[in-house]
Amino acid sequence: MPCSDRDRRAEVEPSIYAADFANLGAQIEALLDAGARAFHVDVGDGRFIDSITFGPVVVRSIAPIVAARGGELDCHLMVSEPERHFEQIKAAGGTSVTFHVEASADPPAAIRLARDVGLGVGVAFNPETPVASAATDAEGADLALCMSIRPGLSGQAFMPSALERIAELRRLLPASVHVQVDGGISAANAAAVRAAGADLLVAGSAIFWHDDLAAAYRGLCERVELGNVTTVR
Ligand code: DX5
Ligand code: ZN
Image (cartoon, rainbow, N blue to C red):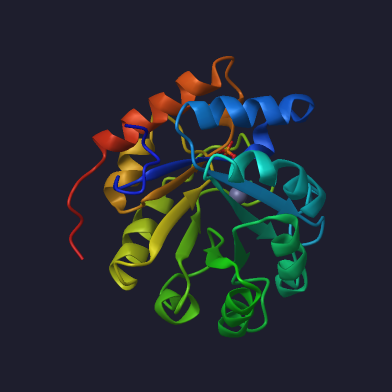
């Protein structure tokens, strides 16, 4: 059974920011074959983060490939005024948007807007942003995203301080809200991230910067399974 099946307790999401964009469709197909279901799509505007990444044009190209296999595009908006982009993401075929609490003037309104547009929704917290108010900030959202790097680039090292923040989010949020982690996830830390309480693990370089993407993906899934523990809430 692939680790992305809905009835499994955790999921690894390949982050296409680390992909080879000359071979993006083939790389996504290989990961779908390996069992991946949700793909993480990093939209960056050169303002909220220094880098300009990609946006709805790329979402539009890959959405049919992913949707044909029952998959989803989880769009991480590392942009200022994220609400301005929800409709375009939806129209391009995105499944959900995760916006940064630091970038939105009114997170509850942004959550409502995403729902109105017909998108799933998450709220992201940068490493230096306290998560103590997460229960309010992420009320009504599907997930809370704990950044374990400063957002901007694939290939950075995991910040160990994220483990405590993951556990805090898991304690603060209802069981129905996923705790997602993004940044520096690798075979070396995936089990610990899972054990801390995360159930959605985003991985870019740990998958795409390997020759055999499917093997790298499956290896991470195995590590996540090793981290399956009963979390005390
Ligand atoms: C960067 C992005 C991440 C990135 C993760 O800010 O949000 O999703 O692709 O890449 P790795 O897993 O290499 O840290
Ligand atoms: Zn991301």
